[in-house]
Image (cartoon, rainbow, N blue to C red; front, side, top):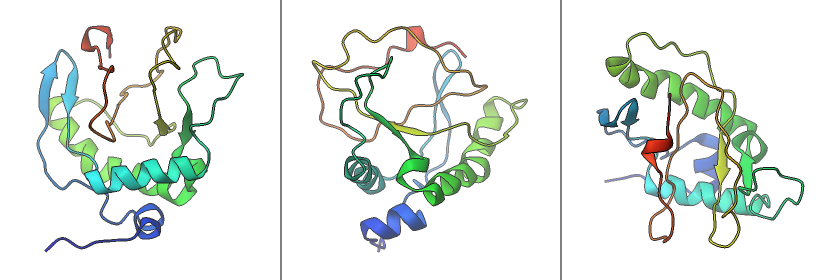
Length: 152
């Protein structure tokens, strides 16, 4: 039986967040897939981002993705994600990339992209040894992660 947690337990206690499946799948050159969060936790995270106003337009944002840092939603959540990545995810990545080392997180954002709002994003890149994206929901149209543009 799977334990159920309310939204506050999930966000502040990181309860029910981890997808305990293991195994790295290589899907492209230097592109890996690792099980990360449960669908229930992802839905709760979206509600938490909405609750703090993350998806409101920001006119001065040069890359208008309607984003919010996990640290804004909850500093405790950010800390728990940082630990989870180091303890649970990083060792799985090291199976494929044995020389990477974990030094914590720079930041983690929840970003919403919507049709009619971000068609003209300027090109940008992350300054990180490893950069990741986690799809938080299903059932959307018009978006795709173009692996040909990803360079690590």
